[in-house]
Length: 182
Image (cartoon, rainbow, N blue to C red; front, side, top):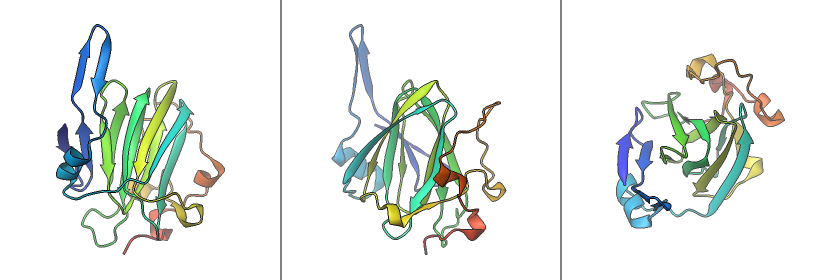
């Protein structure tokens, strides 16, 4: 596995080794030993999630405040613009975002530790998005950071797309009004 640092040191891009031939390919999408060595700690993932979305769907930016989730995310079909925003008040990267394209072609994964809001925009006709979470989904604990808050300065590659948002995501709060991690 190749580990690529991002502009926020705790967020990592992970590229698994892909073995391919005329029959197809094989890759190891998760190995607890290699993953723990890469992130510098053991992580107990308790939930795997899979979503399918159409082009222009924007999900996020979501986080759980009292039951924070670390996530390892990837795309198995299509491509997305994936975004992680640091919401750790004491972090020197507070309010900064990491933006990465994840696709079935590049096989990249993104590691987000606890304390980050997360979201993605579907760039392909559709995308299958998979993620491992370190804590269970707690709907009453979920918060939503406004995806287009100017304070975040996220350059979403909309290129003429009008993002499709859920009712919950339409009610996202700007960073200045969000509850964040201590």
